[in-house]
Image (tube, rainbow, N blue to C red):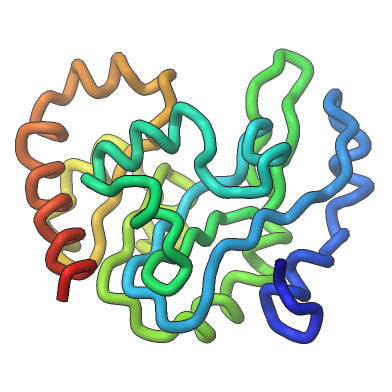
Length: 198
């Protein structure tokens, strides 16, 4: 549990989006999922918690998390080691669903309020993994399609790796772009091992 006098504690207590979330079809209350400590070696910058993570209170406790850990070559113990891995999404709370039961995007207010302070507190991480377009745009300043950003991964490695979102909805994308698993993932896994085992 985050201490209230720490930045993590401030974020855990945040209710800035309460009215926004109450107005969604899910009508849920904020529940920031905070998973970082200063000194982490790896930063995983995602989009926003999904419905299952909203319930569990731990990041990536869903099939997307299973796929992401497979991509990284990490087991759960390594992934959830707060001393070495920080998970900082573009929004700390589940944004809810729209009327068609699709995930709403992360509210920009969250990143505008917290992201700069979190990044300053984390300091110099050795590896940043950007999961999905929202993280690409914030951290890399890209405005093009996710496919183009991921295809240009060599221009950011070995410090930064842009990835697609590991959602099951992207299974067709993975089949269409076999170079992702054949070329990018082996380099990423080797870099993860280098950073964790050093």
